[in-house]
Length: 212
Image 1 (cartoon, rainbow, N blue to C red):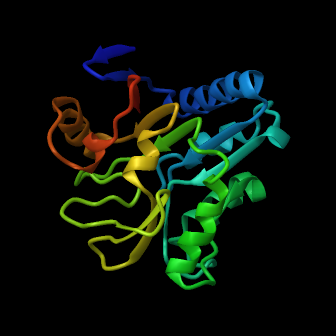
Image 2: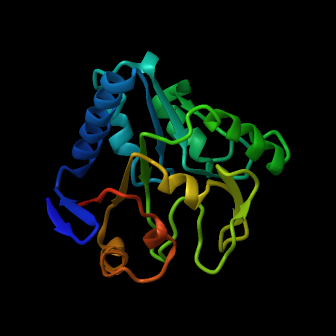
Image 3: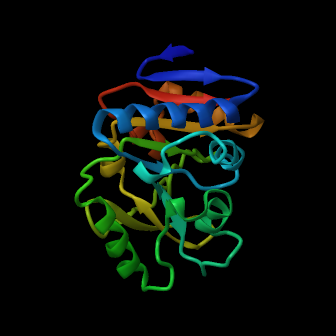
């Protein structure tokens, strides 16, 4: 693991296994420390293999709550839904946005999960080639509905619901997960500190970047 400023870069050919084991290790740490583990998971294709590995690891699921970092505001059965893809692996262990509601009501309802938690133990984030993370996009405001959840629109025009930058930054631990040659350049930009949504994710501890 190499330290680059406020980041720790972890590269491995078996990165999916490493990420799954990392989540498991952090879960055990917080369950032992406070009796519960609250974690937000990235959507997209990148982390799905790691989630499949995680699903088969020994973990106290009764003391673990998984949330989504963000979601496309599409019908629940839509193939683009993060919830649909992740629940196919982790079933109802992950708490999803209610996409049958008005988008503002969905954001408000999801925020109720966090009022007693105050901050998440771990947030696993993806990063796009444009530097976006969760549904926080460059040059696009994420309209804050609550201190926890905001609403934005991706470049393809789809409305999104996302955890807010401020709430993510309160998390005890934060990690980025990026795979493939197409993400090499944006990781370099992240390490250089170029201004983009991903570099605005900061907390008082080093942030881990997992990559292959």
